[in-house]
Length: 318
Image 1: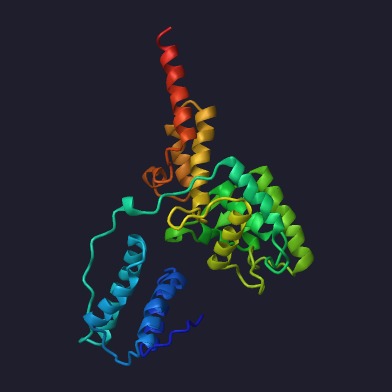
Image 2 (image 1 turned 180 degrees about the vertical axis):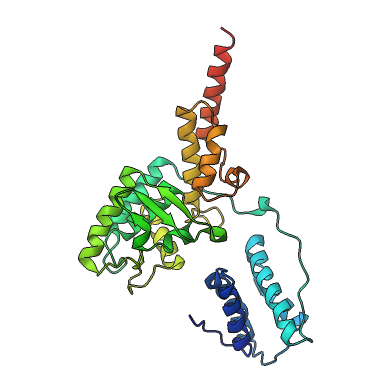
């Protein structure tokens, strides 16, 4: 069982709470990270009590004014769960009230890469040094996989070598969002990229079936923070502006995949609506409503739509 470095007077209770989350199948790493922020605050304030009051919660929330509304909502939601659980142990402890959900329109807008930007990113992945990559071309393989499949970054980082079937050109997502499994068919170019990466991997380290697909420089499973820093560096090398609230982010590869896939269908398929369920299944969504969130109206999509309407109009008026 992994331990987390909680430091406050509530460190034992916090660890117990995270263990319960882990047993329930939740993403305990992300939740422990959120709880650790609160733990650090309590420790820095010299908090030594065993009762959480509304004032101590409010003092903490006052320090979070810089956060995006959805980020704040995520932290508040987990702390509310912790407050409910903690109240069962210490009845005098405060329970945070339920807040209204955050409107999705407040979410940070997705950044849709153009093809030239994708090419520049993949080209500059060759410029990472041996001190930055445990295995050469690691970030080339990772970013290629994110773009060509629309896989979630958490799903990509959780992959082991046993999840890649080179003969069938398949990736097995064993535990995606909501613990759902699915298989992803890879393009020939993506499979070739992984095969080349696998050859380098074998020449560098002993590769077992349960070995992580992507490793950090300490030869442990690559973490989100490492991937985020690598993206920031390659964006700078590619001269792609990294705005504070406008991206690009790792998750924007997923948005770009969906938009580019739809654009490809606009150019080759007659009935676009019949294709959306396939896209939803491939991306691991329950229904196409979830997928539609990713289908941003870019200038290329609007142009393709206009051309299709123009062709339809002409065919019915001649």
